[in-house]
Image (cartoon, rainbow, N blue to C red; front, side):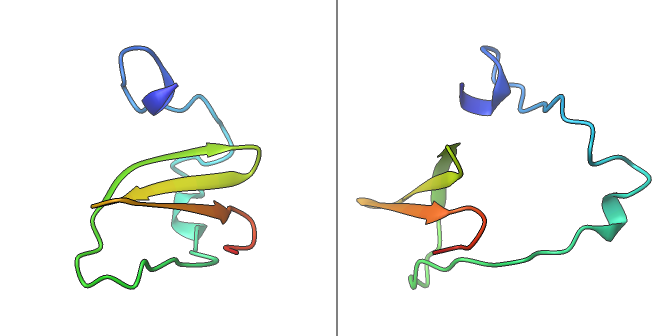
Length: 68
């Protein structure tokens, strides 16, 4: 479901990230499309694979744990 619910709120009910520990988060990998205009449209994930649609006509499937 896009953005977590039918209303598109973007709210996540997960409780592992809290106001008390959010400052400890650090990026573990980054991904670049190689384009100077890195405009990503919608992102979604399924079974640990993140799908990233990039304008104009590219789709990337990325392993969310390893970035491969």
